[in-house]
Image (cartoon, rainbow, N blue to C red; front, side, top):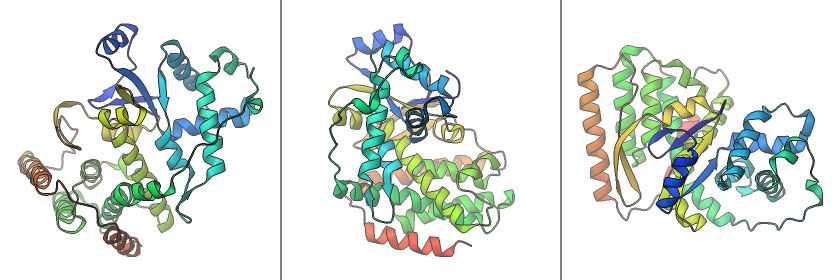
Length: 335
């Protein structure tokens, strides 16, 4: 299926075949397509612009047809929250949320043949307005997205001092020590992104607009990437999504963002869980500027740090106001 990337909790994935779907069903699991925000917006634009839409409709139609053919559900809640959240008011825009949700749900319900021919009357349908709990939303921001945003801002701050490859090892150590001693949270995907950016892999710099002369572009990119990483993390969490949708599911994250896909989906050889924490053993694509001996030491340090914190902080709560102060300082430090 052209232009889409699929990610499961074991890394890069493909849409299951009929035979594979039967195996999942035998194990009592249902495939759940978790849609990235960019995928959701493309679906919305098909309805908003119809034949004038510049969206690559083929990939959308193929995805919907696959879901309908195999009776597979989609999950777009996280994307809707990302797309409809107003950072100024710290609330969801209810009209936008309602409109986006209805169009995405309808797209997967209307027969694909009618959808392709625009043979439907979306406006004639009556949808029930969903309940929006802004208190829970703000908790989500404080305890998840803001932490990822802070980590990305720290990468930007270090990067602005220079990205010579002979400073790569020093820079990544500074980032890890900052997570340990100031942020008080160890971030996995952000650590992987820092490894790539500090190690000279230029294609990942666009995720944070590294090198941009406009500070607002950097902040906007960091915020968007924080959402992307949050979305990707929770979208592959089987147990959590099983509780949300009230059925045993095997989630597959669907995105068209190639950088996000490459960052978060190296081949996972194995992993183990402890409550809500997962530590993965992966075969990563590490920039060559890092020596093997350094990476061996770094990997050992990173795993030990995580294990230490798992046992130490099982009942730890996030100090949201302290995180906000860290964000303010980092935002002010950027040029």
